[in-house]
Figure 1 (tube, rainbow, N blue to C red):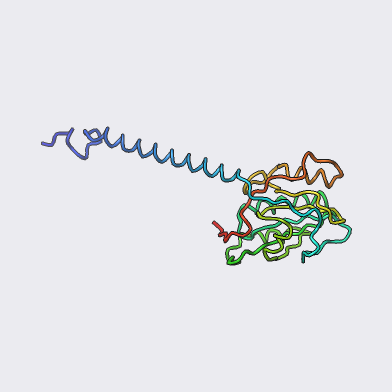
Figure 2: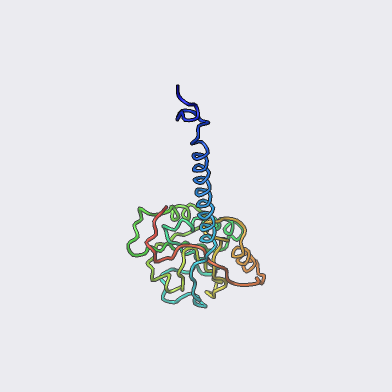
Length: 211
């Protein structure tokens, strides 16, 4: 007769506490890893990209044409940066509120980037009413002093720089943010507290792949 305490098919056998400890340890390790991963992602999303001081006026040697008599917003975008989709979506609010604003999305194709890796940014931008998408080499970003995808520049009708910065509060996050608030204040004739904001996105020179 088999001793029920030594029967391996018996859930109440002597190995049950051992198995329970292993399950609890596994759950604890998994939960710790999940929390650490979430914290790391949150930190990454909150880290702004690199910025330079852009030129005070529209660069004379740029091949991107200004629209005469209208203020302009240029949004520089890496087509493969998933973070920048949120920046493109924020343009819709600005277009609706400021219909005289000439909006151009400058899609920079870094060396080695394949359009197969496009994150849908170009199509999303082209679908917005009144938005012009301009494919440009990295040299154009250099002329405007832009290093990070999602960097927006706002120029007055006479070509003076009015604002430089991002229009999201973190990487890939849509919603209220200081960049949009400051641009809205400028275009409404007001005086914002600042004329810049952090930029959240991929480096324009990276060989970024869609995740």
